[in-house]
Length: 281
Length: 134
Figure 1 (cartoon, rainbow over the protein chains, first blue to last red):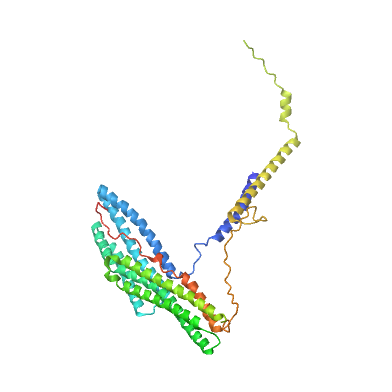
Figure 2 (figure 1 turned 90 degrees about the horizontal axis):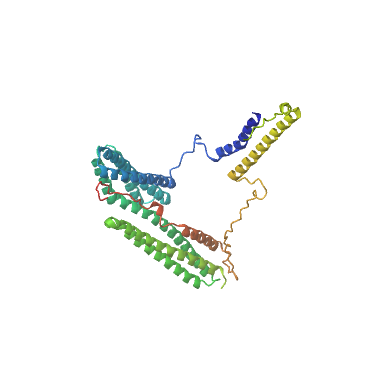
């Protein structure tokens, strides 16, 4: 008996630190956590979570639909209706959370600065409100046929406006990034131009080569701007491109990548100019 | 026909066996204690091994016998600008400032993601119907 007690004590002694460490490793669920800040990352996580739930719901919907088509019983129809309702609700929610993720990302990158961006925010807000209301209206559908009619409304809305606004926002995000680096490089080149003028005025260093190279860098910068303008023009036509939204967006995005390549080259040239200035004639 | 021979029982030996001496009994008790202690020590050692492997505590010199080979990582040698014959503007504050800015911009240019593939539009089944074809 005493031996058994001793063994028990040994076991308790050995495993108690593990449990203490385990408690330390994972935060207690009862501990109040700090208020979660709703930023672009949080919005993106929300979107991913909802999208996964939608995909799960879609798979169960497909199974229920097949069962109804195979057996045609009242029970299978009721089951199909329930699964359709859940799938449609999650579809609306996925669209809403995606739009919110786009909105927060745009706000994070740009800040509300100009009229064009404000217009995008307004349109996105309008979309989110529509899908929130539509999601609520789904619960009032009495039959499977009612649900299918409501689903058709989502389809029309998404294809006519939501998709266009989503692509425009996505473009605004990447375009703003590109314009931001372009602006910075332009400022640096202007500063370098002024410095080269000062050096030339001092007359203690030949700036001919540096100034020629500066022209090359400026040339790359101009080409970058041209590509940006082409992309802007292309994205402006997205509303009229009907079923080629994705293709139009991809082309505009590719133009921005070309613009980015010119910026990289201009930046490399600038580094060479500085090296030239730092070396004696 | 084989005949059974009656077994002669040794009653004296049996009596002697029943009366085990005190010293022998003490000895067997002592053996039991040693056995329990040995078992406890083994269990303790086993638990220690489990704990060490679970929480990766390096209590033994050299990481408890399992030494992890350090993975060689490529560390680029920082570029050092060599100017053979520097001009009067090699240490000019305006030039150095522009150089710093351009270096920072180079990092930014490399890090800029112009795809934003995380935020591309989700694949949704919009045309929901109960036709047999789909």
